[in-house]
Image 1 (tube, rainbow, N blue to C red):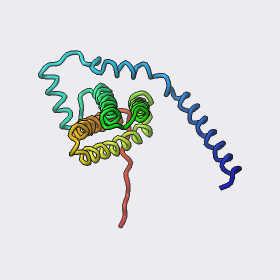
Image 2 (tube, one colour):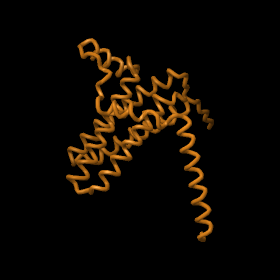
Image 3 (cartoon, rainbow, N blue to C red):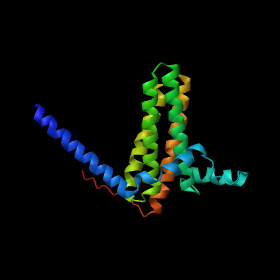
Image 4 (cartoon, rainbow, N blue to C red):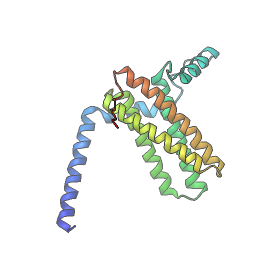
Length: 193
């Protein structure tokens, strides 16, 4: 590929990035950072009281895949997964010698992914975005399970990945309830042999 072709591809990429930025701005992607940051600082803000009946209701809702308050569950587990990701980055960056730049990169990337998942599921209310986000969360759940399994000898990272996998699974369950709440339907795939 010659220099002129590379310059042309760079211009196309720049135009696509600007168009994506404008579309995100139109849809309100950048307008919910304060809400999300508040939920990071105060993840239990929505919890009014803790009693045996509420815990029992949450457990039954989780086991039957129909959480009583999917929005609050989704926010809580999203924030917990983000905080666990930051803890994992701290462990790898500071204790295992991953480096300070890796720590900052993983923290910033983790925040952007967590915010995007939050925005797609709770702010956009677009079934297509929500369905893609659910697919991403399922794949990420599988990834964290694999990472847990592959780091079993390093006990602390394995525990972090196990709890993170649980949080991601809870986001899938709550996210599916949110998705159904906006009229989303799982597409049918016809396979003929």
